[in-house]
Amino acid sequence: MALGMTAPDELPDDIAELKAIIRAQQDQNARLEALVTSFKKALFGAKSEKIDPAQYELELEDIETAIAQVEAEIDADERTAPVRPPKPRQTNRGSLPKHLERVEVVIEPELSCACGVARHVIGEDVSERLDVVPAQFRVIVTRRPKYACRSCESGIAQAPAPAHIIAGGMPTEATLAHVLVSKYADHLPLYRQAQIYSRQGIDLDRSTLAAWVGKSAFELTPVYEALMADLKRSTKLFMDETPAPVLAPGRKRTKTGYFWALARDDRPWGGEDPPGVAFTYAPGRSGQHADNILKGFSGILQVDGYAGYNRLLKRPTQEVTLAYCWAHARRKLHEVTKSTSAPIAQEGLAQIQALYRIEKDLRGLPADQRLAARQDRSKPNIDAFELWLAQSRARVSAKSPTGEALKYIAKYWDGLILFLDDGRIELDSNPVERTIRPIALNRKNALFAGHDAGAQNWAVIASLIETCKLNGIEPHGYLAGAMTAIAAGHKQTDIDQLLPWNYVRSV
Image (tube, rainbow, N blue to C red; front, side, top):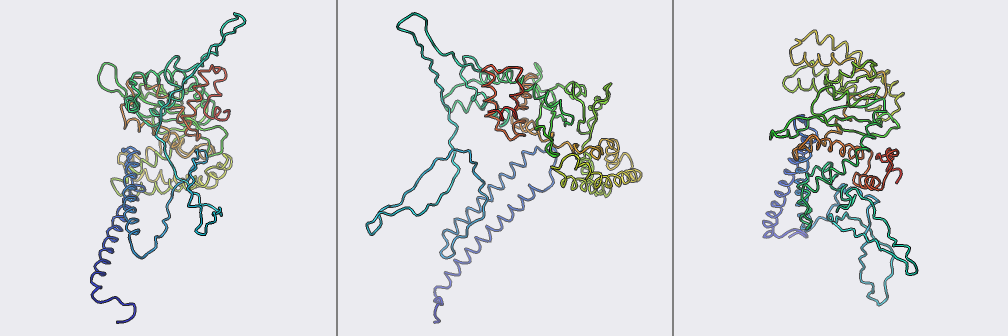
């Protein structure tokens, strides 16, 4: 027998074992390939606009969980394999922020050497792992000693009781902020929050939490009004509206109210004003509501094609100019291509995509540079698109799906091409549409509001929370600090100091 060869009687068992390992690996690879295919389809595939975006997040979570499970199975198999050394996996573990508290744990080896001499430190290995301490409730006990003088009867001295939003009540301002963020940012209804408190032995009725929310909304309303006023001092804003089901009193069913979002985001062209959004609840979708909200505003308003905004053009002074959204124009053409080949619609989509490619290169440049680049690069495309639009409308029936889509673009053409003459205007109104996604999330978790007043409370709190998020500000800390300042008697004349971007700078 040659040196190093396996004995003949050992071969069958080894081959069978190797075949079993190969079959297991092939099965794992096939499962991974199927999961990766599903992941790519969920991430990059066509998505119906009728389905809430949060559903895609859930789909991705489940697929990623399944992929991790298979990878863990592979790791376990590799650890039991007799020969191959483990290959380090290239994983994205994320980064741990510097502001998190560090709790150091030092693990010492045996310090005495075998020779009897104590070892000395020559270096160390340091690793960081993310740890979570479950939310803990605590009780703040405030003692106010009373003092008196033994030598005279000048009276008793005692520090005044600190002021709170809920005077004489149980919650601190941090507790109120937690309830608000849980309800309006994390979409956790009050009855579920009451269940969480109950597990900690704290019995709070939902009505008690509701009273806290109502009082907080009342105290924060001046800040909300200052936010709205600050936005309306801008000369370029976005606006959009979305339905919100609200209980109709005494009718045991819901009615459809609307949230109107007024947003500012000058970051794409380097504007100095911070981003912000203010929501307003209205019982309907009439353009009169938009007109009421925008009293005092003059400038460019970027919107979708909803006809209600035309009321703004009837103002005597004509101080509002409507810029329209290319994303909605693109959507009209895309809907046609879903049901038929529609070569004309495909041509239109390709031309709109060319505009978006140019805009990607211009993002972040100053408005004057964007304007010059658009005149140089985008205007020839728009001129060609206008000619194509006229020729294509002549080739198809006005009542066909393609004809309807082209009619929509032609109807709003003047507002669609305004971006060529003003570097502040975006190609679409997506910035404001992103701010109203939390409304859709709330609709998925619970009935939106039980009353019109409750819906307006949502508008107040959500405006401040979403503005915090736009500015990279942690909402809980901001709300707790702002309410503490309000309880301490912050002057109404200085209310602008409590706007998210100003308050954070001052603390």
